[in-house]
Length: 83
Image 1: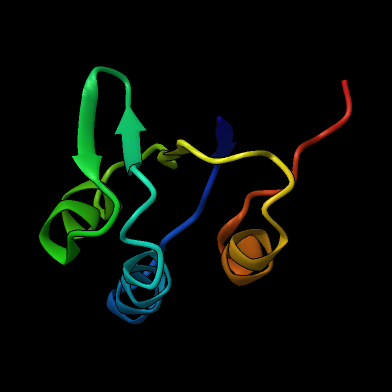
Image 2 (image 1 turned 60 degrees about the vertical axis):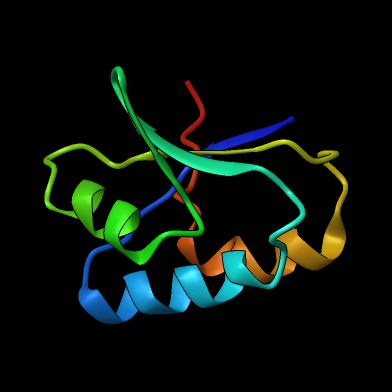
């Protein structure tokens, strides 16, 4: 399972993100903010989490090393800060 925080800050970002996730409709993907979870393949779902003050967490039922999907979602990933 792959889990990372993402940033979708505009309608254009949401459209681009769903265009990517739609290519992988065989992989279960969701976005979560606290207890609220939506389908990452759904533009309506994605838009419903973009107006939050928090960045959603992207969760995909895929191996961490799926390079094709990782390369396509990389622009949306939030940089992890070292503690």
